[in-house]
Length: 211
Image (cartoon, rainbow, N blue to C red):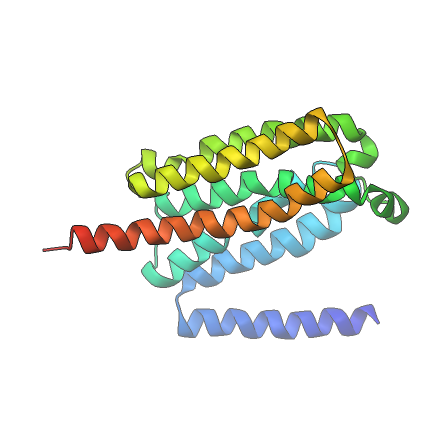
């Protein structure tokens, strides 16, 4: 029953906040609390059933892990952390809309106003493409702000270029198979992009160790 679910969520969430406060730092706790409120209340309870832009607005909560991890390690959230948050934030809409395209019948039955249900397939395909182009630009920011080197830049261009190409192919010739292919690639994309960022960092440490 809902009261038991709320009680369980409250106990687990409260315990988690205490662990973060006493075992990590207050900044991480408050950022996590804000993400929890944003995801569970603002996104799930309010935005998801009311607007087709639910994924766009609510995606910020799902994009917060880099900021939370940085805060946990450094007790600060510098610009570099927010660049990583921005990448995930822009990645979220095309990732979920690709899924919604080939699952639109299920979203329609559920009554949730996902973009393919409210604005149609072609409109959604266009926005998947536009966001994939924006994602390409965002993925270059770690290199632009000198957070990473050439190795990451090359990986980001290759991975993001493939993302844009698949989105463009989906826009030109829609099929459920292409939408499914883009959805699964989007998962692999994010994992490989962040892996490239780590690898570039480690290579930089090896080639240019700190004095």
